[in-house]
Image 1 (cartoon, rainbow, N blue to C red):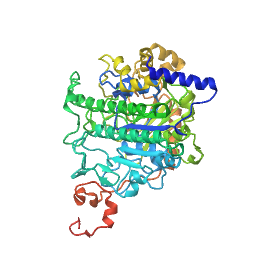
Image 2 (cartoon, one colour):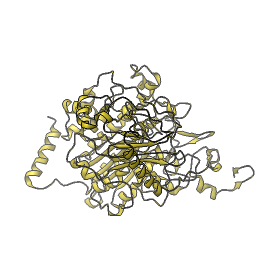
Image 3 (cartoon, helix red, strand yellow):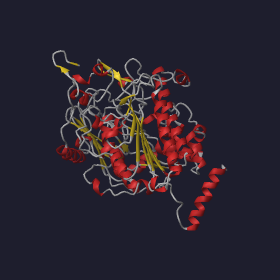
Image 4 (cartoon, rainbow, N blue to C red):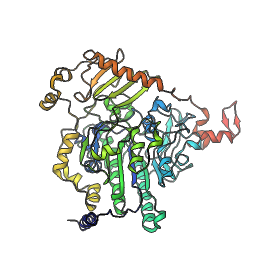
Length: 576
């Protein structure tokens, strides 16, 4: 046995015998929140795909709790707004589309967000990577919204090498340290850069913990929001180092091969972050969350090649492929780990759940939509959440809600297109268990005594894999309902009338039960109507001409502040 692991086990046994807990370096746990961009349900190994190895993400997830009934919004900005505020996007005006670079808006400043709550509890708060919640005035940027520091990009997507962002004919640099442009990292791959910055934050915090007086020791909140695996700019939509792409020569589709290389760097990042936590003695006092912001952009949508197989649809849609997110949580504070959770959860739940996890009162969070799921996740008991609003968009005229096992879908954001099932399935290759067991995450976890076996992996992976084919166990479980819940597909024409699905027995939304269960359909439509009555209008704005980076040294900047300090030539629409 690893000597460090043996010492760790003996130390904890001694603490138990002595009847007291080992003293923590901080009063509250560290929180490491890693969010991927547009990652497909089927792009992680723990959901059954063998095509793109994700050994570090898998090793972390198998040791923790895999969230198999976890929902997100279908697009970046709505999802991130729900994460930060604990509110559905319909209650912040962020429900329609994404925040475009040229809009003079952001997540409303009236909203108190996650890093502000944690900062008040004594946390050191640091953000690395994508923001996408507003920047037209400095008050909307991360360092004015609760983060001690931020390095990263403010817009929705960027080139991974030159770090510029485009919006139709507008083009400019989008990489910042605080409010200042970061021009010195040109040519450094975004995923590598963000990983390096995250590791620096962890190392610096580790030094403070080891060298500060007890009263100065703060817990860490690190928000690592990757560009990966979002597509890049139009001139280089699938950016990855060529030598990494070559490692996936077995994937026949060249564009899927490039996408695999992007996923690989994301997985490496997770490994290095966990490794840094271990090296700094912080791993056994941490909560680590890994999640996507929305479903994968598949089959060329948004110039990307994710896979949500076997779920229907993808990014931008309210089908399972767009709103059921790949996610997991790990922490030694969780009482029952190494399991697959079927508990219903929504991305808005993270705010109250984390507040509860750090032993803070959630009483002041009564006006949010999220539910405190910490105890439920820890002890494997039912959560308080009975339904999850997936979105209501009055401009796109589409909506969806999951209530219990049932889901209703009304309309389509894409006029009925991109409503298919997109692969590849990735089931042809073999799953390499040794990669998982020898990953950076596994080596770090093993050194702390958090072990994992091949048998555990096989069991958990099977449990976390969505199966859409009828099998004996599923039919037996369905009982008297099997004739309705399971059977040949029944088409859905969501542009004509609402569609109803039982997600427990039909997770792939192949069998529209609207005509078979009209009362259940009316029940869910009634709930949607109630939610709609509470919605505020979308706060989207038209293009502001002064957002044009050419006015500001070809840099996306807080143009709202700079306009007020500049002389505007209205006739030529220029800034002097």
